[in-house]
Length: 115
Image (cartoon, rainbow, N blue to C red; front, side, top):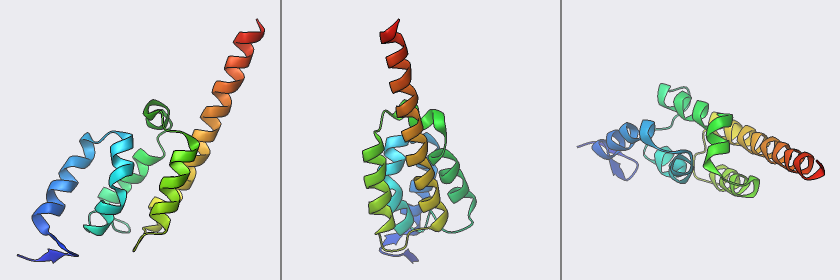
């Protein structure tokens, strides 16, 4: 059976099948492993799905992850063995979106507190 890095192709297939059901936090936790398995590679349809989910403002907001957590995930992924450029850019954008969400929440809280 052919190997993808140190994993079997069947493990990569199982991991790929799990992506649609992963919540935002789980997807973030598995980015490096999915890249190591060869599931996330430049210009693949799976990578496009992952990138689209990473920059989805609603998913980011619902995840409850902080800007700091997203920044740590970005730094860790970027420092990994073979980071995919599109994923790095998506994580950078996710950090920006999380910051925008945090600022919006802060201003809404201030507006409600002032009234």
